[in-house]
Image (cartoon, rainbow over all chains, first blue to last red):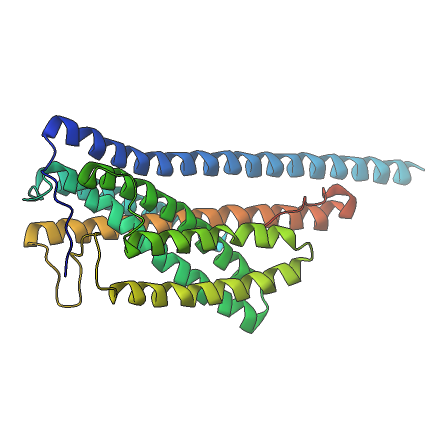
Length: 72
Length: 242
Protein backbone atom coordinates (compact mmCIF):
# COMPACT_ATOMS: atom_id res chain seq x y z
CA UNK A 1 0.00 0.00 0.00
CA UNK A 2 1.40 3.39 -0.94
CA UNK A 3 1.08 6.26 1.50
CA UNK A 4 1.53 9.30 -0.67
CA UNK A 5 2.12 12.63 1.04
CA UNK A 6 -0.73 14.88 -0.05
CA UNK A 7 0.80 18.01 -1.53
CA UNK A 8 -0.11 19.92 -4.68
CA UNK A 9 2.57 20.29 -7.35
CA UNK A 10 4.70 23.37 -6.83
CA UNK A 11 4.33 26.21 -9.34
CA UNK A 12 7.04 26.33 -11.99
CA UNK A 13 8.93 29.34 -10.64
CA UNK A 14 9.27 27.65 -7.22
CA UNK A 15 9.88 24.13 -8.53
CA UNK A 16 12.55 25.42 -10.89
CA UNK A 17 14.79 26.44 -7.97
CA UNK A 18 14.70 22.96 -6.47
CA UNK A 19 15.36 21.26 -9.81
CA UNK A 20 18.20 23.70 -10.55
CA UNK A 21 19.61 23.06 -7.07
CA UNK A 22 19.60 19.29 -7.54
CA UNK A 23 21.29 19.43 -10.96
CA UNK A 24 23.82 21.98 -9.69
CA UNK A 25 24.72 19.60 -6.83
CA UNK A 26 25.34 16.89 -9.43
CA UNK A 27 27.46 19.17 -11.62
CA UNK A 28 29.35 20.50 -8.61
CA UNK A 29 30.28 16.95 -7.55
CA UNK A 30 31.63 16.21 -11.01
CA UNK A 31 33.49 19.50 -11.35
CA UNK A 32 35.07 19.28 -7.88
CA UNK A 33 36.24 15.75 -8.64
CA UNK A 34 37.66 16.78 -12.01
CA UNK A 35 39.49 19.67 -10.34
CA UNK A 36 41.01 17.30 -7.75
CA UNK A 37 42.08 14.91 -10.51
CA UNK A 38 43.64 17.78 -12.47
CA UNK A 39 45.62 18.82 -9.38
CA UNK A 40 46.85 15.23 -8.89
CA UNK A 41 47.83 14.97 -12.54
CA UNK A 42 49.92 18.14 -12.35
CA UNK A 43 51.62 16.75 -9.22
CA UNK A 44 52.51 13.55 -11.06
CA UNK A 45 53.81 15.58 -14.01
CA UNK A 46 55.91 17.68 -11.62
CA UNK A 47 57.36 14.54 -10.00
CA UNK A 48 58.17 13.13 -13.43
CA UNK A 49 59.93 16.38 -14.40
CA UNK A 50 61.94 16.26 -11.12
CA UNK A 51 62.82 12.64 -11.78
CA UNK A 52 63.98 13.49 -15.29
CA UNK A 53 66.10 16.41 -14.00
CA UNK A 54 67.64 14.25 -11.22
CA UNK A 55 68.42 11.52 -13.72
CA UNK A 56 70.06 13.96 -16.15
CA UNK A 57 72.10 15.46 -13.32
CA UNK A 58 73.29 12.00 -12.27
CA UNK A 59 74.22 11.11 -15.83
CA UNK A 60 76.16 14.37 -16.19
CA UNK A 61 78.03 13.67 -12.95
CA UNK A 62 78.86 10.11 -14.00
CA UNK A 63 80.07 11.29 -17.41
CA UNK A 64 82.27 13.93 -15.80
CA UNK A 65 83.80 11.34 -13.42
CA UNK A 66 84.41 8.96 -16.33
CA UNK A 67 86.17 11.73 -18.29
CA UNK A 68 88.38 12.53 -15.28
CA UNK A 69 89.31 8.85 -14.90
CA UNK A 70 90.19 8.50 -18.56
CA UNK A 71 92.39 11.61 -18.39
CA UNK A 72 94.10 10.29 -15.28
CA UNK B 1 50.50 5.31 -20.25
CA UNK B 2 49.25 3.00 -17.47
CA UNK B 3 46.83 0.22 -18.38
CA UNK B 4 44.03 2.22 -16.74
CA UNK B 5 44.77 5.12 -19.05
CA UNK B 6 43.99 3.11 -22.17
CA UNK B 7 40.64 3.96 -23.69
CA UNK B 8 40.08 6.71 -21.16
CA UNK B 9 39.64 9.47 -23.70
CA UNK B 10 37.00 7.53 -25.66
CA UNK B 11 35.22 6.61 -22.43
CA UNK B 12 35.25 10.24 -21.26
CA UNK B 13 33.84 11.52 -24.54
CA UNK B 14 31.15 8.83 -24.53
CA UNK B 15 30.22 9.75 -20.95
CA UNK B 16 29.94 13.44 -21.80
CA UNK B 17 27.78 12.62 -24.84
CA UNK B 18 25.44 10.30 -22.93
CA UNK B 19 25.03 12.73 -20.01
CA UNK B 20 24.40 15.56 -22.47
CA UNK B 21 21.76 13.44 -24.21
CA UNK B 22 20.23 12.57 -20.82
CA UNK B 23 19.94 16.26 -19.85
CA UNK B 24 18.38 17.06 -23.22
CA UNK B 25 15.83 14.26 -22.80
CA UNK B 26 15.04 15.35 -19.23
CA UNK B 27 14.26 18.95 -20.12
CA UNK B 28 12.95 18.68 -23.70
CA UNK B 29 11.44 15.19 -24.11
CA UNK B 30 10.28 13.63 -20.83
CA UNK B 31 6.75 14.78 -19.96
CA UNK B 32 5.84 16.48 -16.70
CA UNK B 33 4.60 14.25 -13.91
CA UNK B 34 0.86 14.55 -13.28
CA UNK B 35 1.29 14.75 -9.48
CA UNK B 36 4.59 16.49 -8.90
CA UNK B 37 4.97 18.61 -12.00
CA UNK B 38 8.40 20.03 -12.82
CA UNK B 39 9.92 18.93 -9.49
CA UNK B 40 9.78 15.31 -10.67
CA UNK B 41 12.71 16.06 -13.02
CA UNK B 42 15.00 15.55 -10.00
CA UNK B 43 14.12 11.84 -10.31
CA UNK B 44 16.43 11.54 -13.34
CA UNK B 45 19.53 12.52 -11.36
CA UNK B 46 18.66 11.37 -7.85
CA UNK B 47 17.70 7.75 -8.60
CA UNK B 48 20.65 6.98 -10.94
CA UNK B 49 23.05 8.38 -8.32
CA UNK B 50 21.50 6.16 -5.64
CA UNK B 51 21.42 3.02 -7.83
CA UNK B 52 24.98 3.45 -9.12
CA UNK B 53 26.33 4.13 -5.63
CA UNK B 54 24.72 0.97 -4.21
CA UNK B 55 26.02 -1.10 -7.14
CA UNK B 56 29.45 0.45 -6.57
CA UNK B 57 29.45 -0.64 -2.93
CA UNK B 58 28.67 -4.21 -4.00
CA UNK B 59 31.42 -3.95 -6.66
CA UNK B 60 33.86 -2.85 -3.94
CA UNK B 61 33.04 -6.06 -2.06
CA UNK B 62 33.54 -8.21 -5.14
CA UNK B 63 36.92 -6.57 -5.86
CA UNK B 64 37.91 -7.15 -2.24
CA UNK B 65 37.28 -10.87 -2.75
CA UNK B 66 39.89 -10.63 -5.52
CA UNK B 67 42.42 -9.25 -3.01
CA UNK B 68 41.78 -11.96 -0.40
CA UNK B 69 42.10 -14.68 -3.06
CA UNK B 70 45.22 -13.38 -4.80
CA UNK B 71 46.92 -11.21 -2.19
CA UNK B 72 47.75 -8.70 -4.96
CA UNK B 73 47.63 -5.07 -3.87
CA UNK B 74 46.05 -3.90 -7.13
CA UNK B 75 42.78 -5.63 -6.17
CA UNK B 76 42.75 -3.77 -2.87
CA UNK B 77 43.35 -0.52 -4.73
CA UNK B 78 40.47 -1.26 -7.09
CA UNK B 79 38.16 -2.04 -4.18
CA UNK B 80 39.24 1.10 -2.31
CA UNK B 81 38.61 3.35 -5.32
CA UNK B 82 35.21 1.70 -6.04
CA UNK B 83 34.04 2.31 -2.47
CA UNK B 84 35.50 5.81 -2.41
CA UNK B 85 33.66 6.74 -5.63
CA UNK B 86 30.42 5.14 -4.42
CA UNK B 87 30.54 7.16 -1.22
CA UNK B 88 30.77 10.37 -3.24
CA UNK B 89 27.87 9.29 -5.46
CA UNK B 90 25.78 8.26 -2.44
CA UNK B 91 26.28 11.67 -0.82
CA UNK B 92 25.09 13.19 -4.11
CA UNK B 93 22.06 10.89 -3.95
CA UNK B 94 21.30 11.95 -0.38
CA UNK B 95 21.55 15.66 -1.15
CA UNK B 96 19.46 15.51 -4.34
CA UNK B 97 16.95 13.28 -2.54
CA UNK B 98 16.65 15.80 0.30
CA UNK B 99 16.05 18.61 -2.19
CA UNK B 100 13.34 16.53 -3.85
CA UNK B 101 11.81 15.66 -0.47
CA UNK B 102 11.69 19.33 0.51
CA UNK B 103 9.97 20.22 -2.76
CA UNK B 104 7.52 17.26 -2.72
CA UNK B 105 6.76 16.67 0.95
CA UNK B 106 7.73 19.97 2.52
CA UNK B 107 10.41 18.32 4.67
CA UNK B 108 14.13 17.76 4.00
CA UNK B 109 13.91 14.29 5.58
CA UNK B 110 11.31 11.69 6.66
CA UNK B 111 12.55 9.50 9.52
CA UNK B 112 9.44 7.33 9.19
CA UNK B 113 10.40 6.14 5.69
CA UNK B 114 12.45 2.90 5.61
CA UNK B 115 13.93 3.59 2.14
CA UNK B 116 15.53 6.86 3.22
CA UNK B 117 16.72 5.62 6.60
CA UNK B 118 18.18 2.37 5.23
CA UNK B 119 20.10 4.28 2.55
CA UNK B 120 21.45 6.64 5.21
CA UNK B 121 22.53 3.62 7.29
CA UNK B 122 24.45 2.20 4.31
CA UNK B 123 26.17 5.56 3.69
CA UNK B 124 27.12 5.96 7.36
CA UNK B 125 28.42 2.38 7.39
CA UNK B 126 30.71 3.05 4.45
CA UNK B 127 31.73 6.38 5.93
CA UNK B 128 33.64 4.32 8.51
CA UNK B 129 35.66 2.54 5.79
CA UNK B 130 38.39 5.15 5.43
CA UNK B 131 38.81 5.83 9.18
CA UNK B 132 39.08 2.03 9.63
CA UNK B 133 41.88 1.88 7.04
CA UNK B 134 43.64 4.92 8.48
CA UNK B 135 43.62 3.40 11.97
CA UNK B 136 45.74 0.43 10.79
CA UNK B 137 49.37 1.28 10.04
CA UNK B 138 50.61 -2.01 8.65
CA UNK B 139 49.73 -1.91 4.91
CA UNK B 140 49.03 -5.64 4.54
CA UNK B 141 46.84 -5.80 7.61
CA UNK B 142 45.08 -2.62 6.49
CA UNK B 143 44.26 -4.19 3.11
CA UNK B 144 43.10 -7.46 4.67
CA UNK B 145 40.81 -5.88 7.28
CA UNK B 146 39.44 -3.40 4.75
CA UNK B 147 38.69 -6.24 2.32
CA UNK B 148 36.75 -8.16 4.95
CA UNK B 149 34.81 -5.00 5.77
CA UNK B 150 34.08 -4.35 2.08
CA UNK B 151 32.83 -7.92 1.53
CA UNK B 152 30.55 -7.98 4.59
CA UNK B 153 29.21 -4.49 3.96
CA UNK B 154 28.78 -5.29 0.25
CA UNK B 155 26.67 -8.32 1.18
CA UNK B 156 24.62 -6.15 3.54
CA UNK B 157 23.61 -3.73 0.76
CA UNK B 158 21.33 -6.10 -1.25
CA UNK B 159 19.93 -7.65 1.94
CA UNK B 160 19.07 -4.19 3.17
CA UNK B 161 17.45 -3.32 -0.16
CA UNK B 162 15.29 -6.48 -0.13
CA UNK B 163 14.26 -5.93 3.49
CA UNK B 164 13.10 -2.41 2.70
CA UNK B 165 11.16 -3.58 -0.36
CA UNK B 166 9.25 -6.02 1.83
CA UNK B 167 8.29 -3.24 4.25
CA UNK B 168 4.56 -2.55 4.27
CA UNK B 169 4.19 1.16 4.63
CA UNK B 170 6.37 3.72 2.82
CA UNK B 171 6.35 7.34 1.76
CA UNK B 172 9.19 7.14 -0.79
CA UNK B 173 7.70 6.68 -4.29
CA UNK B 174 8.14 3.28 -5.96
CA UNK B 175 8.25 3.43 -9.72
CA UNK B 176 10.79 0.73 -10.54
CA UNK B 177 9.62 -2.83 -9.88
CA UNK B 178 10.31 -6.32 -11.24
CA UNK B 179 6.85 -6.23 -12.85
CA UNK B 180 7.98 -3.42 -15.13
CA UNK B 181 7.41 -0.30 -13.10
CA UNK B 182 4.97 2.57 -13.33
CA UNK B 183 6.90 4.79 -15.73
CA UNK B 184 5.38 5.69 -19.10
CA UNK B 185 7.54 5.14 -22.24
CA UNK B 186 9.18 8.59 -22.60
CA UNK B 187 10.00 8.73 -18.89
CA UNK B 188 11.38 5.19 -18.96
CA UNK B 189 13.66 6.03 -21.91
CA UNK B 190 14.87 9.22 -20.23
CA UNK B 191 15.54 7.35 -17.00
CA UNK B 192 17.43 4.58 -18.84
CA UNK B 193 19.67 7.13 -20.58
CA UNK B 194 20.26 9.01 -17.31
CA UNK B 195 21.14 5.78 -15.54
CA UNK B 196 23.56 4.85 -18.32
CA UNK B 197 25.13 8.31 -18.14
CA UNK B 198 25.68 8.16 -14.38
CA UNK B 199 27.01 4.58 -14.62
CA UNK B 200 29.47 5.65 -17.33
CA UNK B 201 30.45 8.64 -15.21
CA UNK B 202 31.23 6.28 -12.33
CA UNK B 203 33.30 4.03 -14.60
CA UNK B 204 35.18 7.02 -16.09
CA UNK B 205 36.00 8.58 -12.74
CA UNK B 206 37.04 5.16 -11.36
CA UNK B 207 39.43 4.70 -14.27
CA UNK B 208 40.83 8.24 -13.83
CA UNK B 209 41.47 7.66 -10.15
CA UNK B 210 43.10 4.27 -10.81
CA UNK B 211 45.26 5.78 -13.57
CA UNK B 212 46.40 8.61 -11.30
CA UNK B 213 47.26 6.28 -8.39
CA UNK B 214 48.99 3.80 -10.69
CA UNK B 215 51.05 6.56 -12.33
CA UNK B 216 52.11 7.94 -8.95
CA UNK B 217 53.21 4.50 -7.76
CA UNK B 218 55.18 3.95 -10.95
CA UNK B 219 56.95 7.29 -10.57
CA UNK B 220 58.00 6.30 -7.03
CA UNK B 221 59.19 2.88 -8.20
CA UNK B 222 61.11 4.49 -11.06
CA UNK B 223 62.73 7.00 -8.74
CA UNK B 224 63.71 4.19 -6.33
CA UNK B 225 65.17 2.06 -9.14
CA UNK B 226 67.08 4.86 -10.83
CA UNK B 227 68.21 7.03 -7.94
CA UNK B 228 68.12 4.74 -4.91
CA UNK B 229 66.06 4.54 -1.74
CA UNK B 230 67.27 7.94 -0.45
CA UNK B 231 65.71 9.73 -3.40
CA UNK B 232 62.23 8.52 -2.45
CA UNK B 233 60.33 10.49 0.19
CA UNK B 234 58.65 8.18 2.73
CA UNK B 235 54.88 7.95 2.33
CA UNK B 236 52.76 9.68 4.96
CA UNK B 237 50.29 7.52 6.85
CA UNK B 238 47.23 7.13 4.65
CA UNK B 239 43.94 5.29 4.34
CA UNK B 240 44.63 4.69 0.64
CA UNK B 241 46.55 1.57 -0.41
CA UNK B 242 50.17 2.32 -1.35
